[in-house]
Image 1 (cartoon, rainbow, N blue to C red):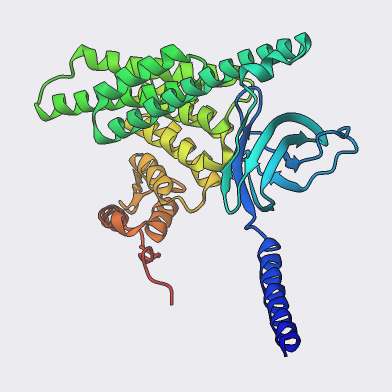
Image 2: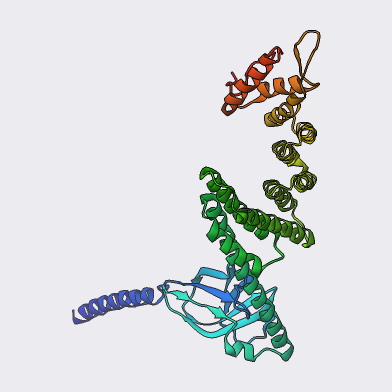
Amino acid sequence: MINRIGRRWSAGLGAALAVVVALSTQAGWAQPAPASVHGHVNNAIGAPLAKGEVKLTQDRASEEKSRKYTNTFEIDASGNFKGTGIAPGSYLAVVFQDDKSVDYIDNVTFTAGEDHLLNFDMTRKEYIDKMTPEEKKQLEEFKKKNADVTAANAKIANLNALLTQARADTKAGNFEPAITAMQQATSAKPDEGILWVALGDAQLGSADAAAKAAKTAGKPADPSVQTKFADAAASYKKAVDANAASKKPNVETAAAAYNQLGQALAKSGDGKGASEAYEQAAKALPANAGMYFYNEAATLYNAGKLDDAAVAADKAIAADPKRADAYYIKGQSLIPKATVDPKTQKIVAPPGCVEAYQQFIELAAPNEQARVDEVKGILTGIGAEVKSSYKAGRTKK
């Protein structure tokens, strides 16, 4: 009896011990949560390492070529890397670029479930000290060049800021601050044509404002106004020269400078110089030749040089047959040559005059209605039939 009970107790105890052992075994084999990593890699000049890998290993005893790595993480274009799946433990972390190790950190410990921050900064003293003399020399040369580039970029950024603000001030009529800013800019970089154009624009705006103020007050223009126009013309000439002397001349800058030079010279009374400037603008940028030749025609017309104005208008029309204002200038330049037929006593317009007026009526924009009415009156006054109807501004169906 006792033996049976003993055997039963013994068997029960054995079963209980087996359960405990089983539970202990299961707890012992539970896997810890993996760790993750994120970080940044800088090269020896402090810039992001834009290409490479960060690898982890616990195989410290092996040679680099035969070493086994447990984890590999790609470095992106910003020098950043991240990843997960790292078993807890102590690792040797190595940075590779083009399959060559370039930096390392040993004894990096990862704990279960941790997101570990791991940065590599190759500008640190310990890294630089391990460089060869030749590598250090190359690094210093690169740093110097990089410093020069950084300084140049900072200078360009400052000039761009001055240019942007000056253009805004000129547009708003704040000419003096714009002039001051661009004088500073051209002093800092006198070989940049676009800066001289902006200075000329501010000076031309100031001259126009002074001339308008004198006219409104019914007073003769102060001599200083002519000086302002001359200053603007001088700036535009410097823009032309600086742009032409640059390694890569910009045709748009050249055309803008010549066009504005034409305006400055015309307003200062130099019609011939203005005409030549507009011609140069058209050569620089043929795509805008219609506008530049029209500006030349208008300048010559305002200077009373009607024959030359008509020739320039024809150039504008040839470059842009849809340019209404060029036909207007041509008609206006020719109409003073109208004669009276002694037999019929009718007014005879010179060749091309009526046709130019007719084309203007045909092409004029809605905001040109006043001029359209003026031209129709002229045609009616000389007995010419108004063949074309006013079409501009109609909505297409």
